Image 1: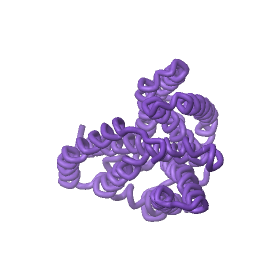
Image 2: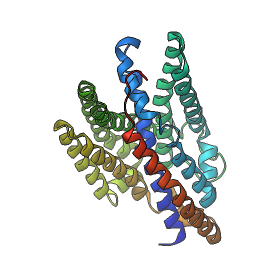
Image 3: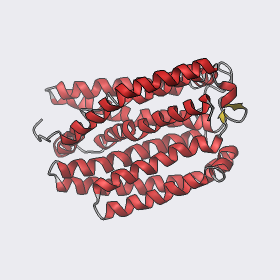
Length: 335
């Protein structure tokens, strides 16, 4: 593998981690939105806050990492994406900021109307942010981002069948991951009835995501034929693996094997995330910008890889330790 390929793989590892960690955080906000009225929904919201509290900001490290690597390693792609898709990207950034601020303010608020206001902002932005990020992915994958500054359609590049499918799928996947994680968290917190409630939601979310994926086949065939050809060609093993892992996850949910289903759900989402670049390889901006053409000079790529390796030695143990602490953190219903 050449340095550009290695950097692409490293960047996609970061994107995968953001999908399975940050995506679950967004999904927690989705279930917060559907938890119900203040009184009956409070126990579920407390569990969601308990699960998100230690890691909700840390997970955005992976998104920042992906953007920095794209900017330094593949600057023409970064410029094209940011200038053509700046509307959904700006909306996603606003959503991330609003979500974080609302989450913090709701926990410190003492009056009910303030908690409702900030809770609504947190939940709504948790749904809209992954939707806009999904439309960005759909716009790139369907070949609607040409090289150059703002050369693509500023509206049509992200409001189109493939982008809308990507946005809805992103929200569904986030909701599914969150429900799966919350099942295990509820069991460890000694809340079996809540675990059952989230198990039902995880099953429902899995069925909805599966139906959307099946329906999306026709959408991609009509709207993004090159992406469809890649998914049914080179990337087909990953697509089939994702389908198998999805079925396994459903069976594990039925058997209430919550710790195992966390692993199978993560692997299922990871296969979907990796199926995208495999389908459009070697193009970063299909149909005409291969990664070698977009890559920076070899010395830049090598420097970024070295810096990334050094940073990983510092960051990854810290993130792992944070997750371990979160896993062991006792749940206090009154917090």
